[in-house]
Each structure stands twice: as C-alpha cells, then as structure tokens.
Length: 462
Image (cartoon, rainbow, N blue to C red; front, side, top):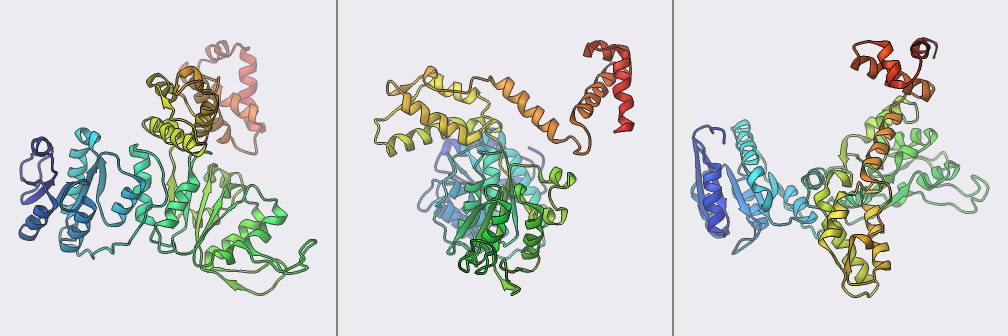
C-alpha cells in the first residue's frame, strides 16, 4: 500500500477476528494508524474519542448493523468516510448506502484485490477535502421495492450512481442494449427519489404512431382530430409531481422532439388543439438502445434535446460484460418461474450453469429469462443439464462478430453508400498493415490492383 501522510486513522469493524488480522496486515502503511474492533457499539465509542478518517465496516455486525453504523457515523463525524463490506449486497442496500453517504460498498469475496485501492482512494479523498466543511446528509427512509439481481462490479457501480442522482430532479438518460433492464433502473431512480409517493408513468416512444404520440404525451381537446370525441389528459399531466419514463426515446419523431424540448426548458406545454399553456412538474427519465450521439450526427435526433436529456447518463452493461451475474439471474428466474407455476423445485447442474455463463447472450437478461422459462417447460427431471437448456444455435464467437459488425455499420455516415464506405475502411486497414503496398492489399482481398485503385478514387466522388 502506498505511504499515507501522517496522522491518518483507519478503523476496521468486523466480528471476524481472522479478517481483522488479515486486513490489518494487508492495509499496513507508513503514516497510517489502524484501529480495530469487533462490534458497532465499540466503533461508536472509538469515534467519540478519536478522529477517524476512514471506517471499513462489515454490514453484518452487532448490536446494530453496518447501515445503522453508517448513519450514526455520518451524524457524529460527517467527514469520516465509510466503506461497507458484505457477502452479497442487494440492490436496495447499495442504493440506500450510497444515499446515506457511504464511500463504497464492497463484496467480501473481492476484498483481496479491491480493499486496498478503495481505501487508498478514500484516504486521498480525505486529504483532498481537508479543511472543507461538509453538511450532514439526510437519511431517507427507503423500502427497496426494486429488485435487480447482480453482484458484478459494473452493475453495482450503476446502483451507486442511482443512489447519488435519485434525489435530484436532473434529467437522466439510461443507455444500454435491448433486454438489459433499463426500465428496472428507471423504477429504482423513481422509488429512491423524493417523488416516490407519486406515480411513475411509462411510455414507449417507439411503439406509438407519430400521429398519436403527441396526443399521448400532451393530451388533446375534444374535436382536435378525427376520433377525439372527448378531452384527454396526456402523460405529462398525469405524471405531475412524479416521474415520466420515456422508453426508446431514440425512436421519437423530430416533430415531437421539439415539443419535448420546450417542456424540459420551462415545464410548459399545450394540448393538441388548444392554445392554452399548461404547467407540469415532472422528472424526466429517458432510455434508449441507440447511440444518440450518432443519431444526432445523422440528423435523426436534435442536438439540443440530446444535451438536455443527457445531464446524467446511466449505462447498463450488457450481460456478456458481467458473466458473474448469469448464475444468480438464472437461479432467480428458475425459482420465480417454478413458484409462479406451482412446479416442483428444479435445480441447475454445474455443467448447465457453466454453459449459461459461456453463452454470449445477445438478447441480454430478457433472453436469459426466456431461455430459463423454456427449459422449465421442457424439463424431464428436477435437474437441468446442458442438453435441457435451449441456447441459441449461433456460437458466442458468431454473436460477438455480429455485434461488432452492427457497431461498424452504425458508425457509417448516412450520406455515403454503405458498401463504398465499408470497402474503403477495409482497404485502408489492409494498406496500413502492408505499409501502403496496394498489390498486397489487393491480394488479401482477392481482387485486382485496378479494383483497389478504383474504390479509393471513388472517395472524392461520393
């Protein structure tokens, strides 16, 4: 561990004496004083008498748990940074701990490689903030209704960001591939926000025709269009005081984007067929599987609206980037499906679990859930074997290649024929590898040198 400036104090709190011995040796550094105790009551007494800079505490301690200890430390010593450790932190624990001011939440099994760098960062933060005044955070009461399964670091980072931004009214843009759980994250933002007593209303911008989407969002007056037989409130009126979740906002037509921008700017709008201006107090959370920056470049999404929405971005990692979550999700779906259908308990064999973890999952969590549902329906025994799990026939390598091709195609400029653009990209890469040798590039492509020259020459004509 890097040397720490003098007079820094670290307090370890854990009922496991073996862990305290290990952590003391693991974190030892010049200029760092390490104190230790095995229960929360003793920890409070230490903090009453000693200026402690950082506390590393287990969640499961007595006589009160680590979350309560965090709250008491934040009240008693607001400058002290607290790092919580636990076996399998839940979504609610991570978000609530972050909202209460925890510096970090770590899994016990990852401490051997995560504890030291996280403690070093915390001590550096203490040094950077020295002399500053920090108000005590409020401690909201939360019930953790949203259940998002995952222990991967990438997903836990999402939970922590939710905890930090949920209490503000800043617009949030949730990005991620289809099936990653963007709506669940939107619900978490709402349920951990001051607006949780009001409703969160969801609308899928890509599932409603353009001529109806405006009415769906802003409402309409009687007779404003064919079929408008009565006045109707839109989603912005219905969500007043709460949260409006705009799913697949990348599919919103440009004509509607202009009207949405006005609401984001000043909170006002008009119903279809009316000149009256209405006011609404709505927190906007949007989600998309598209790259909105590329959509802006292509002219399909307004740049000013993009920046209004992208105040805070939450990126949900695809399932292939967090394989450690796959067995937990599979077990969760298995239990939920069997319980819902009154089925006998079914277990996943170690071989089947390994097979699930090795799959690429282009459809992400949604695909995994559907796969487990089909496996349950077809199961011939109470143990699922690899042969019982209907994985997609395309191997992971093929799926990865398809995903990569999708990214390449999406990056192509909209005003250039795709085949010409792709050809020039491939030829350019081959020329780089061959040191500019056109003959070698042509041979690798299996074409004539004249063909390569023609494709390169077409660049100026496109």
